[in-house]
Length: 608
Ligand code: M6R
Image (cartoon, rainbow, N blue to C red):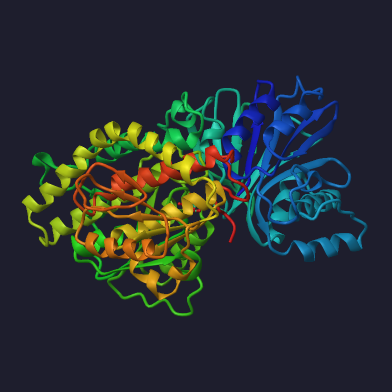
């Protein structure tokens, strides 16, 4: 939630910051702003709405010579989306400017304290309170670093912040506590940002800041200090391998469609180096030192939760590991976590920064349970705090709607199931080999199928775009896909959609069916197909229209049939998933919705 970037270097800083904000816009986009030094003062420009509105305003500003600046793209927490609540926020005396990602939980208390001694506030934000608290300590005689650290020690909550001061316009200060912050180390320039793509065109050398650390960066130097006592900290720089092309649209109209079409590559990258010679076993050295759990608790949010629900079938069926899957915001507040001595928690998160998932991880670790992380973003908080980490290697996912990340999570879950199945000898080598061969064939199969799937999605969107509500039905492993299909449709096209277990329909929801309430049925050719077919017939008997995602030669009569290439269950999910994604994409695009940045959402949910 919210993206921040700071730059101290030799280039015109405002364009660098605005470009960085564009790459961070997935984190929030209800307003944006920048600050830069100009003629001895801090100039702040902010605008409600997307970055384009800010750019229009900036076109009028005298900023050409500033070589140090910072910016913010907002996802509202405190205060409605409005210019007055947009960041950066200035201190009352105008000498300090601050951008912030996170929530200061005790801001009302601090605000009351500062108001009582004459401070005034022009926004409803916690950030404006924090910048004035720093100013208060500065005016009390502390140097800027001490004032910054003292204020942050008084603030409770989560933050990644970047600060500028009129007295040192070539310096950026930043700090983190429970929100991501990365230092980019260039030649004659330094960056701080919420995510790596913000500065990827300029440097691949990064340092991941830890909680309770503070940075002072100039064009030619940086130092990292402990917030606690301002003692220096030494951290290793790391080189990021991401391809800048991967963080750009590459000729596609939207990031989402590009990311859907990247899935064959995501699968082949994910398999690289993971298949033993002869394809008889999966190599997952990350798990070699860990015992096979007696019970696995999968904890995640949103699409990552759906991956977990899907993965349960494989982990139980192939590896024989009993699995519970839980939403992180529920798991973290359970009164008693009944975790056995030999249990393992698996947290799944694309971003590795989702606040609820991170809190669930911490709670499980506090109980002494091994927590395995399945993450896409290298160096993210979850990746660093888990007992062991498996990276999904999907590359940067920019579109707010998660697509290729789910595919990569499903792939890794399949490999985990096969790895444990092989290790426990629950599955013999030739049974493993059969599934590995199917996985190995997937990239070519999908590559070939995606263009015609895209075309079918386009046709169906023209037929169904006027529907106000949808059911998505599935059974077994396809129930997780039904939930995901419904989530994708609602988040992108704002059409009400419910994912349901097909067998549950007759226990109530079927009452909603009428000719204007269509059903999207996952009717793949597997053992549960006859049951799903009966459920479809029940819908049809109530005049409900049905789209069925099915396979050639399946005996099924519905309003709109969508045949996708056949694959044995449960790996058939790898062909069904992009169909669901493409349908939602085409529905949203046809309805003129903002596909990559749907309203009210943010890519990385770093608040509760
Ligand atoms: O980064 P994470 O995987 O932890 O994110 C979890 C959810 O916020 C995310 O999957 C969300 O549901 C997406 N918007 C779905 O498209």
